[in-house]
Image (tube, rainbow, N blue to C red; front, side):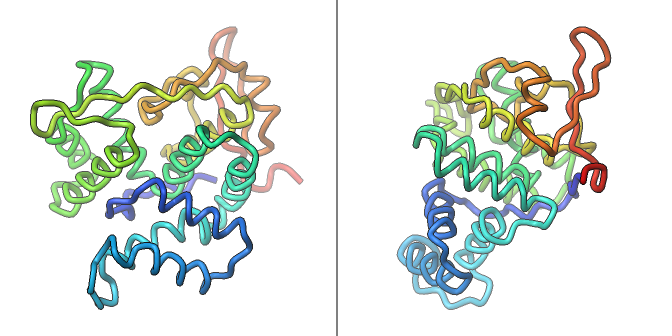
Amino acid sequence: MNRRTNQIGFSQRVRLEWLEQTANLVLSGNDKTAVNDALQELLRDKVSIGGQAVRGNREKIITILFKVWFTAPAELESLRASGLDLLKHVSRSDHMPVHWGMVMAVYPFWADVATQVGRLLRLQGSAAAAHVQRRVREQYGERETVSRAARRVLRSFLDWGVLKKTDAKGIYSAAPPVTVDSPPLIAWLVEASLHSRANGSAPLRDLLDSPSLFPFRLAHISADHLASLSPHMELLKHGLDDDLIMLEKSGERN
């Protein structure tokens, strides 16, 4: 089941290490209160310093961290569990793709900003923040909240090291892509990407080369191999080179 909406949701600057810490807390078996207390302490001197607002930036960031790795929507529970398992077994260098994929699935807005960045990088080798924001506003509406959220996602991309500043203000270039060659991780990333798409399906070649995955270089994998690695994806062959991958419809498999 695809759960995409045109809600923003992801409206804060979130560092990769905060997601890593959240996942580690969950993997260690901590309950909601313990995870919240640990994140409050982690962010105390980094966000909303001295602030006591009920819904200040720190609380909003913690809400995002929780939704990604602790209280993901029910239809993403299997993806979350598989993602946590990957974090336990893949190399540390492969942790970023896991966090990226889970954020994409939970917050399609992140994927939409990444898509615009990835397209601009391919077209001209750089991405202007103003151009990204304009394209995202065309999709989500001419609202200041959209521009503000897009700016914070772009700042997150910089924090994660997938974008780099250039000499020109507001113009970013891509960092060298991270190679992902583990078939289970590629299959999981493809499934996460499908959750961020409106129709929950796409040709395999589009998924492996998606601009929303611009920080990564995914190794080639056959459609049959990909489908065999996930019980939640289906393969529909249209021709010799036209393999459609889609999310399994709820209730079709016992």
